Image (cartoon, rainbow, N blue to C red; front, side):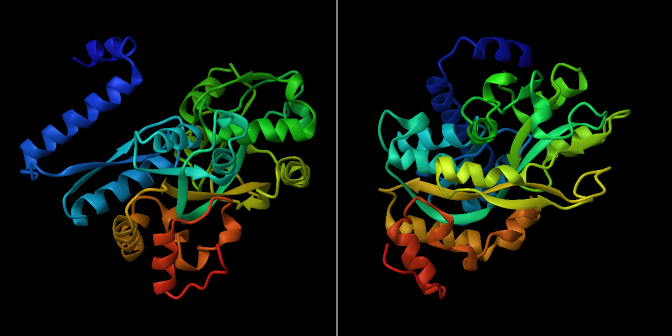
Length: 335
C-alpha cells in the first residue's frame, strides 16, 4: 500500500492532495476518537521533517486540538517559509512559520512574491533561526570563499533557507561561482554522506535534527564554517533583517568551539482576516503552554512575551495580537 501510494502521489496535483489529506484526517479522527462532526480543520504550515518548524508545528497543533473548541488542528509538511507564506496568503492554510526575510518580501510583493503583496500579519515573534554552514572537516572548505567551484546545497525550493543562502552567496560575490543544488536538510545530509556535495546551508533552530544526524555518521567529522562577517553586506543590500550570532560549542557532537553565523528571526503568522477572538485564543493557548511545547523542541523555550517587539518583524502585527500582548503587559508604539 505504501509503495502504491508514493508512486501515485507523483501524478496527483498538490492542491488536490492537500484537500484529500485534510478530508481523510478529519474522517479518521472523527471515527477513531469520536471527534465532533461539526469540528473545523485549522491547518499550520511548517517545513521539512529535518528542521524545527515541523516538530514545533506538530506540538502546537496538538495543544490547539486539545483546547480550541470546535477545531481539529493539523500540521502540514511543506518546503518551508516561502511555501508557507504562499499557502496562507492564498487561503489554503490558516497559520504558518516563516523567517522574516521571506515574510518581508511577501508583504512588499518583492523577490519570490513579485506577483503581489500577501495579506498576512504577524501573530507572534518566535526565536532566531541560525544559518548553519555545514561541511566535512577534511580541509576542503574552511571559509565561504573556499566554496568557489564546489557543489553546495542552498536549501529546498520554496524555503527561506534557499533565499538566505543565495543572499549570503550574493553578498560574498560568489553566487555564480558555485554549483548549486536545491535539497532539503535531510537530502543534503544524504548527499554529504554520498560525496555528492561539498557543503550545505540550512537555517533553523538549535539543535537541528538533520545536522545532529550527520554528526553521528561513523567516519564523518562535522565542521560548521564561520560566516558572520557577511551580515553587514547582506543588510546593506537587502535591508536590516539579519544579525550576527553564534552556534555554541557542544550543540552538535564533535563541535568544540563556537561558530559565528548569520541569524534571522522567525514569526508565526496568519491571514489578516483571521477573526480577532481566534487569534487571541491561539496565542493564549500557546503562551500558557510554552513549557509543554518546549518538550517537543527546546527552541520553544525562547518564545516569550518579552520578544514581542515590532523591530523583530517587518510584518505588521495582527490587531488582535497587539491587544493580546498589551493585556499581558507589553507596550507598543503606534503600529
